[in-house]
Amino acid sequence: MKKLLFIAGMLGLIYACGGADTAKEENKDATQPAAEQAATPSSPEKGIGKFSAIELGDKLDAAMATKGEQVYDVKCAACHKLTDEKLVGPGWKGVTQRNKPEWIMNFVTNVDEMLDKDPKAQAQLEICMVRMPNQSLSDDDARHILEFMRKNDGVK
Image 1 (spheres, rainbow, N blue to C red):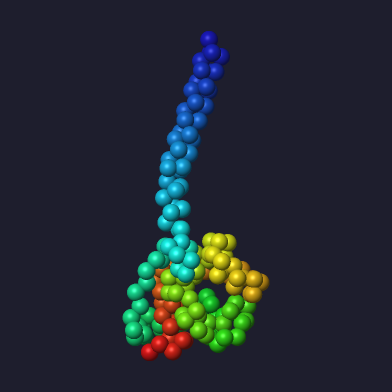
Image 2 (cartoon, rainbow, N blue to C red):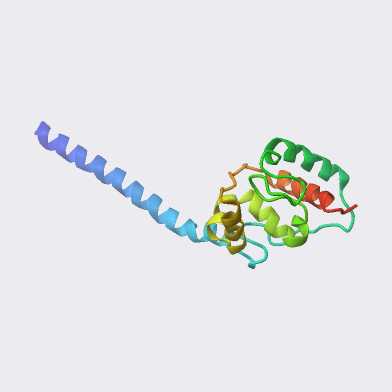
């Protein structure tokens, strides 16, 4: 009798654990498309990521540019020069004229997916031959860097 209760208990435990995993998988499947949709490109010029519209002023935000320069010094300067000269990565001179603000923001915050799927990022990777590591930039850091790039390109 003890063996029968033990076997019934084990089967109940296995069934209970199996049901929970199935429910998790179903929930995961239900949420997966929404997450993928959030990362789909809004247009080829804007890249792949959550930024679809960036409002830039005509004038530079000096405070944001200063913060962006601080981020640049810590996370970007080892691979990017402020001129058009390539170091490890491309030089930043003219980067805001060559790319839309949304593309830049999506690239610096979503590096891996951009390098895997975005044609413009892939073309740059072929030139540089080294994948940019994900710097785990916050949205604010990315925006500050964009403003610093604008300053580097002569926006006043």
